[in-house]
Amino acid sequence: MTLLSGEGYVASRALATVVFLSLRLGRPLFLEGEAGVGKTEIAKVLAAALGRRLIRLQCHEGLDAASAVYEWNFAAQMIAIRTAEAGGGADRDALRAELFTEDYLVERPLLAAMRPQPGGAPVLLIDELDRTDEPFEAFLLEALSDFQVTIPELGTVKAPEPPIVILTSNRTREVHDALKRRCLYHWVDYPGFERELEILRARAPEAQEALSREVVAFVQRLRSEDLFKKPGVAETIDWCKCLLALDVIQLSPEVIADTLGAILKYQDDIQKLQGSEAKKLLDEVKKGLVFT
Image (cartoon, rainbow, N blue to C red; front, side, top):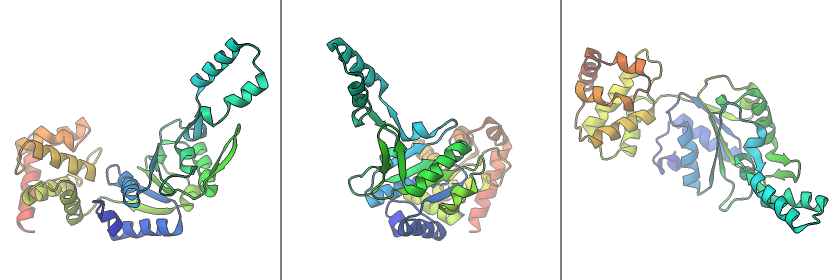
């Protein structure tokens, strides 16, 4: 917990415990939860706290093993071929051997994570794994089991020291059980009022206490509404910083209407807060704060 709080990350006891166990046992950590609750930030904070390099693999639909591990610098290879041809009498076998060397290799995140790094093994963040498909999951399971990858032209690259692996998922689909069993698992939920307030104090310390409490209480109230996308902690922080930029010292229906785009990202959700609805929620929030 001290490791995380030292970098301004306010973690629950359960999250801090699973992070500690992941580091102590050398097991990958699989973090699942809604977007904006601080899953990605864990990897960034760990890298900063431990003085390690952060290597991020941003997952997306269609991501395959080759593009996650390496690719060849085809432009540089073509220049080398043209140069050899211009010189005349190029030995094809020798040229082929020369082209597929480290000089023309472009490292992608998984290969980079297997290389020795100054300061120790890197933190490998595999972000939003749920955006990929099952074949990539199967490949990843193998790579994380042995902490090695194979390049057909060069052979197998094995990590001298396993990287610290953090995998995240927003649960847009279920990740296969086999991969989850390889990891320690934790569901990162929305924080309660006091912890979210503590997070906001750490990330926006210039905000006055009264405004911070109103912001957190309003966002927490919003999450109980029937919204297409509930605001995460990241949105709470962004909204507070927007309010500070506007020199706002307390919430009002007008201010909320003007800044809803900082906390809600879908027009249907924003429309629900138009008119008297924002005032109604704000009145509830302020009434609740009086009795806390």
